[in-house]
Length: 61
Image 1 (cartoon, one colour):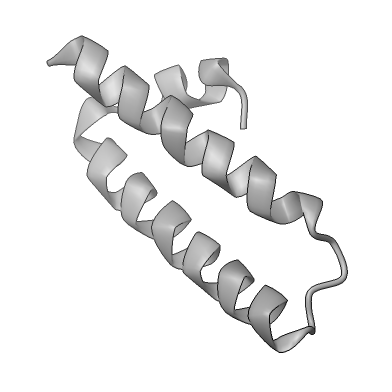
Image 2 (spheres, rainbow, N blue to C red; image 1 turned 90 degrees about the vertical axis):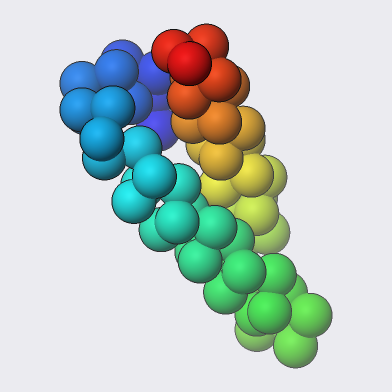
């Protein structure tokens, strides 16, 4: 997810997007722990997207 795509969404939708990303990250961590995750770079991608979104939320107040 690029910062431009985050900025294209409304600030009211940030919380819902953050919740979705956190759920996705939880599921990926669970799959990784069980040994079913083939694309381990997905963990890093989702974690960075969460950080981007949280940074933007903090910056906008």
